[in-house]
Amino acid sequence: MQNDDLRSLVNSICNNLLEQVDAHEDTTKEQIVSYLRESANIISSIKHSDVTSINNAKLVFSDAYKDIAKASLVSYENTNGKFEELARMHGQTLKQCIEKQSDLPSIAKTLDKIQTHMLDEIKKANEIIAQLTKQVKTLEVKSNIDSLTKVFNRRALTSYLNDICSKKTTPEDFHLLVIDIDDFKKINDKHGHVAGDKVLIFIANIMRKTLRDGDKIFRYGGEEFVVILNRINTKDCLRITQRLLKIVSENKLIYKNESLNVTMSAGSTFLVDTDTPDSLIARADTALYKAKKNGKNQIFSENAHGI
Image (cartoon, rainbow, N blue to C red):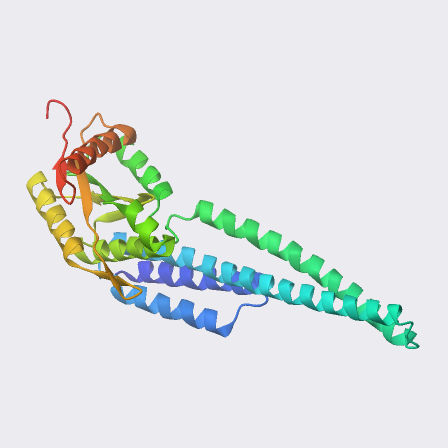
């Protein structure tokens, strides 16, 4: 890793953190410590000369400030709830004083002022909540990282494939996989959507550990992932994918003391000069359909006509 790359990465970390500290008055020490620990872990995993992993690290750091914004949003929502409860209590107290014709008019007047102040604070909190919600949505639209699995998202895939297909020369041995979790709906129906999310994170982590550093992983949507394998022939592509499917099927995810058996199916293809992003994905989708039809938990390859 060159000094210029290192300086760029550190600047990205510091700038993102400082922006959020300046923007949100209630940023806590725990949030900052968590951010810095995550930074240290990601930096330690970067290969010495791997530009791809450096860029990926920058995207992760850029995405990390979303968590601070979301935590701030939760904090304001909690405060809002407390104010509403207090306002109700004071309103009831004021009503009781009036109904009993109490001779404590000054207390009633004070309670009235307190209630008015609290309602003003509630209005301000609601305005901040609306603003933060808008900011979080904007960040999610602009981000290249899937917030759940921490792999690249579909937006990043679209940009990447557009760039690749617009070049005059086809990258050497460029293979694309569309991978789908088998019977994912059954997992959600039986165990709930939280279990489904755990499965997606489980799969993403296995792919990160199994594939090479230069390979790219994207969450395509729902339970589907797209994987880009560079500088690899078709035979080795099939071998690596079969190994990945085997590792997933042999590992068990424990959820609420119950073992979840998960398998995946994959469709593969390789890039040709005439490909567009749509034609490349469509061909891999066709291969995936055949893998599912043939019994699942397997890979099927579909090449361009005439290849």
